[in-house]
Length: 257
Ligand code: NAD
Image 1 (cartoon, protein in one colour):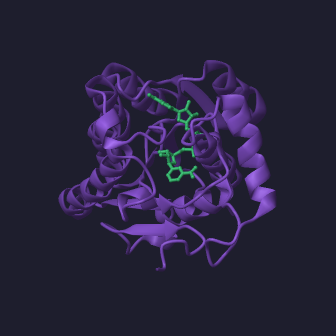
Image 2: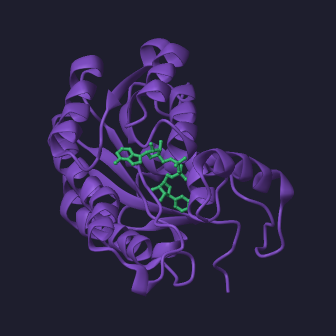
């Protein structure tokens, strides 16, 4: 039996990278998934690939109406909602403090912080109808330590970590657990993009990094989306029933010291 049999999830940023890896694992574990993203072509390809188990929702997480619509789709297509994986994200290059642009700052915070908050807002009522649920927010090692990313991105991810705790305190009595995951270097397109590379180059590079390995961390290679998906599965499933208000670091040990 699948570990998510009968469950319904909304996954944001589902068209690529960590989100896509989580769609694959969750569906394999019996979950039905609303795959939310802004890449329509890739999103619709998921419907083709997974058939009845996946519905694509065009959902820009900076747009509250589109977030509400994605949650509503979970209800109308699959009968309700049990799991929300707030995972959509963008990077902010290698921007220095003197390079901060006010509008870009607002955009980063809108995607990385306000998006997950509004996602929770619209998911919780549906989870309460089911008697509980699980929310997982993708933070980052950049939200734990300085030195991994630019200031807007890093502080936004720190906000995600704290927001997860605040939400856990408020929601766990109602049987909704809230946790975060802190990925380290994971071979996805964002990883290359954060180094200022164009998307195509970033995609190629991310793939190469995974093969290449490195020496900077105890487990010397880039992580894969599936590494994060397994942590999300633990937190989303009954295996994580006693876990709320915390985060799991999946980083090959890079933050050990
Ligand atoms: P990715 O670029 O492969 O995937 C991100 C997805 O989010 C894309 O499909 C993109 O279309 C989508 N997205 C972007 N803006 C959106 C918006 N406004 N609304 C809806 N969807 C949007 O990158 P990834 O590495 O899979 O990133 C997933 C999450 O993991 C992000 O939150 C990222 O910050 C975090 N993260 C990644 C790493 C890493 O090394 N890859 C490390 C730490 C944290």
